Image (cartoon, rainbow over the protein chains, first blue to last red):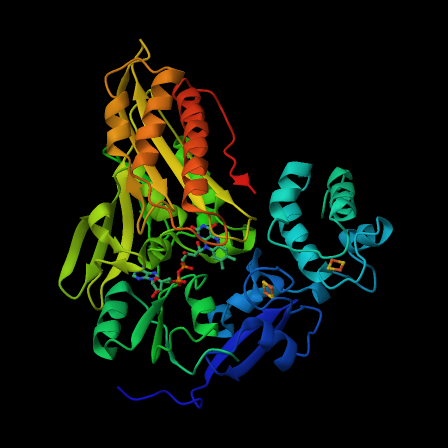
Length: 165
Length: 298
Ligand SMILES: Cc1cc2nc3c(=O)[nH]c(=O)nc-3n(C[C@H](O)[C@H](O)[C@H](O)COP(=O)(O)OP(=O)(O)OC[C@H]3O[C@@H](n4cnc5c(N)ncnc54)[C@H](O)[C@@H]3O)c2cc1C
Ligand code: FES
Ligand code: FES
């Protein structure tokens, strides 16, 4: 059995926020490192780096995932949405607007992950109730807000006639 | 990049995956959802030479019912199982699948990975004992079916042979009039359960217990059936007093570890309370009550 060296590179093609990228990466490169270091998309944060806090949450093919617990090679061929992909034509996404209006953030470190979890929820369940919202962000830790304003911010969008869309 | 370097392979079929794993030898590991393996690799608790990514093998994500058996494909993610028709029909499956970790982990982690990891505190290996499940494996010597109690041998240790993969889990669909529930006690969503209990029971029209299976998770090196407790209940009309006796018999066989979460005595008391709560939900469900499952958070 030979010891693998760091030289193996695997070519992957991913679509991030609608744009295609093709890169040769080491298999052990985590998706979050790929996004931040290779693509310079630093909106996705690394909090705990131990799969616990959810700060690194992005969507892979529509599902929320912890990008610190996923190799970039596993996302090959996939569609990734990060916080940078939420605003359209300079207009904040309704969720971002609502977080701002309801003070759903203080330091803002957890916010990208919170937004991506909330966005995934409202995609599947546009008028989610408070219980469903709590369950959807149960994997996102916030050390500042005490969560109440985050819940209010998401709830306001879910209660809007257009839902999260 | 925290994990040690490894070579990455992505086979196109189950057969190719098994051949690859056999040819690469003991340094190679399958990678499914990665929700157990990647944290281990990041901590360098393991340094496999090769990872064989089975995560997108075709045809291993399914949940179907046929001839009285329910089969769930090994690569079905927890969240996907929670939303399946099988989970809608069998509440104990929904309790388990929908209660694991958080939405993000449930997007990726798979039932096959969970039983293969054989973590003593994990939900699938415990809950599946309440359904007398069987694990379907495919390896260099072909296919075989192993009852779950013979599959999980010790903490983190299974009966899988080199190159062998779990392809599906199957169990008999619970009979009409059967109700079940599974409840875990945990610190937060993104944390493994401290203890858990599962009950699947069948009552007849006179409320007499025709069949019952009780499982305790986090109560020893592997999940265990509380056979003495089941014997207390079988053939009798169920009452609170009878359940209290059964709960005493159940915790008599529990051997939880003392750790940061509490002493063994504390956990036995926790298990007793959880079992009574789980039994209550299972009984009401056997009478067709619609009760949303919910774990208990510390
Ligand atoms: C933050 C966090 C919280 C969690 N909380 C819970 C919880 O509350 N309850 C719970 O039960 N679990 C919990 N888990 C574990 C989670 O459920 C994992 O998804 C699961 O245990 C492993 O599945 P996987 O597909 O991710 O497997 P992997 O991580 O890909 O693999 C796990 C092991 O099994 C092997 N393997 C995988 N698939 C197969 C197969 N088909 N055949 C043979 N071998 C295979 C791999 O080689 C590896 O050794 C948590 C995980 C995290 C990160
Ligand atoms: S950084 Fe990924 S879960 Fe905390
Ligand atoms: S706003 Fe600071 S961690 Fe959430």
